[in-house]
Image (cartoon, rainbow over all chains, first blue to last red; front, side, top):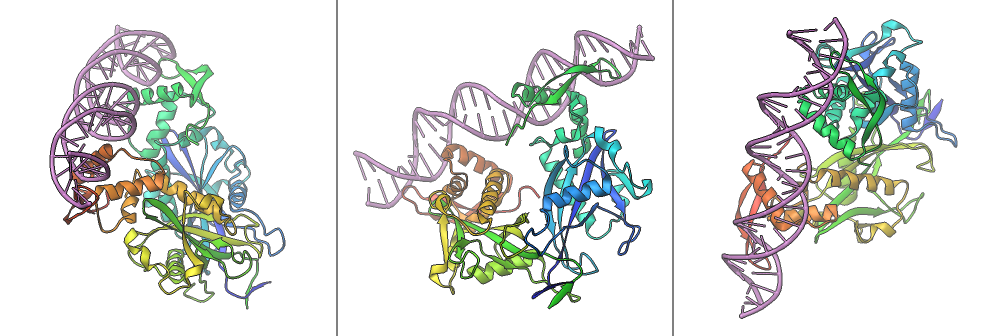
Length: 231
Length: 231
DNA sequence: GCAAAAGTGTTCATCATACACCCATGT
DNA sequence: ACATGGGTGTATGATGAACACTTTTGC
């Protein structure tokens, strides 16, 4: 038992895990196996390890990485993970005051098969943001967390490098464009996107990678991300 | 005494209060009156009220508003207050695990005199970001919180409406430009800024307000903020 | 009159958008 | 041969930066 002079909240991390599969933005949800919200779909996440001793426990980002790897089987490195927002409304958890620090993670499509390699197939699933999510009621306030996460990446995808976190290490221009389209839910003009892409190459953001990609038509050149454009 | 099965962190809110005084971006700091970091300058803030009962206590945003008004004397309404980031590194507080949810507040220059109307004059002070802050060591990790807050508003000032939160209800073009210059620390071309401003008027973001402002030269027209440009 | 700041004009480069078009390849 | 999608061309309009210039006030 741990005693404190004043009441304290429980602290959790929740992670919005996103990827693009077949030109479709998807979110990973876990089916809850315990009350409250038993059998309801929820974000992966859990309690932050806190210690009253000298070490004080684990950092928030480390907790998010740990929960992500524990609940989904994804590797701890190579994954983009960024803090999203702290959700601490009263009443968001019926058991008592729980504050959650939400993170969002971007999974490149080549890592998708790693998800839940050792977990039950029934309790983790990718959901299409456009087609399936609107009809789905999530546990707690996880619906609001997902909404904020979508706003965040939609706002960032055209002005930052996060799109590169959703494609394999090497990719074609069309693949990168499809990621943009899946995230924003709108079509991009292929010609104009290509020009934007060529500017990135001129600026050293991307570079040609060896090999070609055989497609439905003419084979496409393959590129790789070279470095952060804006630090 | 409050008992829990697992150790829990203490939860605080800290607020980076910013304003522009005389074309200079300033931050409000409070001198700590207790250990740790006694007599060191720190951000206003304090513990979030949590209850183990049915009501669960107060929301995070409400806690930030309350602390802001308690420690600075600023009014609870009329103030822009937005969540910045959750800081939860282990070791950031020597007393034990403390997680803080940081907010930033923007104070229009006409409200500056309200600060600390009822408080000791010695323990709250506006510090110039450009001239005084670099040499100042803050309590805890508050220096990092301030840095992130500055990055946030510098990134937003040209692409959102936050500049209007730093000027009085009615203002001249030059006043708004000076706010931009104070925040970014760079000079804006008066002619180009005016044109940008005129576009805002064309788009209905701002509108003419009654009256003129007598300046060092020709009197300037006065404007007021009409509505959010991007919702 | 003169300084200072309001306000206008002009030029140039960059970039988003729209859309037409050519070209190489697998079937 | 032909559809598919890679890749190119081009015109237009909005915007940002740089900078010269005119106008209106207070002193």
